[in-house]
Image (cartoon, rainbow, N blue to C red):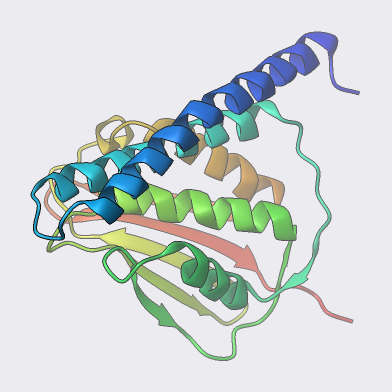
Length: 209
């Protein structure tokens, strides 16, 4: 049973998230409309793209906080994580910001909660979208044998700690760690100022009868 104080905090956060998403959605709609009516060579287009990215980042921060406040509910089942990755990339990426992707064929299924696995992948892709830079894109790899490892990396340098990764990173990582642990996985993050950022999430292969 969830303690009353925790339930009240979660409800307050849900209300705040709902209220915040309305103006954020309006800002995004205005930016989208202006991008349609402005000439393609107008330098203001760059500012509109920045606004859209900031709205997406703000939604990510709100979602991460809400995930941390909600109780964990699991319905584990064998899942092909590569199919989920491909589905999310098709839905949410554009040619300019899609990570370079390498997926090993024949990966085993892993035991995951489909909704939580989807939320985890969206969270991590958003993190690397924020920290990657022009010339240092995000890379995604899925490899495995007895376990499946998702690796996200970028060679963008200068990052020294989790705190240096920018707004939303701390909440996003804390939420990701919680979701990974709840599903029996491990998460390893390496930050090197000269070599970039690498994150590995590993799940054991599902035992399929």
